[in-house]
Image: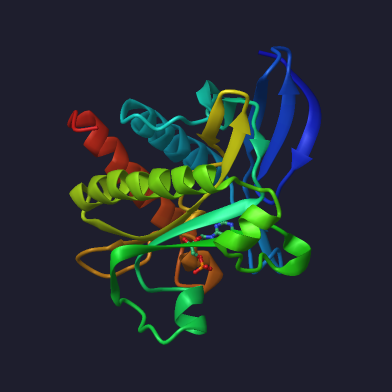
Length: 241
Ligand code: 5GP
């Protein structure tokens, strides 16, 4: 498939038109950023890790009945995806309190959240991705009430599937962010599912195996990402996924 016009350059991914109508090409770059782009670096091979993990999870979720934009890999950092009209929301599922909710609300870091908590941010860098509630989402026309219920239900199901998978690897899925988009056929999971957009804690050591390693200078982020990729690969070899 041929890469055409650059449509969108995000902080870590570039999206191109392809020579097939309705299909876009996503390139996972080696850029890593934090704090709304204030901290940034290039880490060789990081894009390949994130592309591989995202492809794995899109496949896994599809097998379990979740519609995703994933169509296939073009090379080790390049993904063919269904073209979606993206909904400008970051949907965040949380199983354990960490990150921004500990700063904003009286939770303690590491406090289990059962049932899981879903929050939504309006995807807008200039405004610092502010929190948004259901009434605002509907008033702004981002989702209808039925679509909102569908997104919530899909997010809870994705959370269950991913949490169970990571538990098998000895990893707690603390939280993650996903994004959805639409075609005429309905709402699909888009964007990525990678160590950039999840919090993963090793169940034995409590170590972070995700972008927090980079955000807070907790060690070598590439070896943390590699450990996740290795454990997923081992699990795949074992035939459990
Ligand atoms: P928090 O709200 O605590 O900063 O983030 C919650 C979860 O969503 C974390 O796993 C974090 O990595 C993810 N997340 C939140 N905002 C973004 C974002 O703008 N980009 C990415 N890649 N992940 C995000």
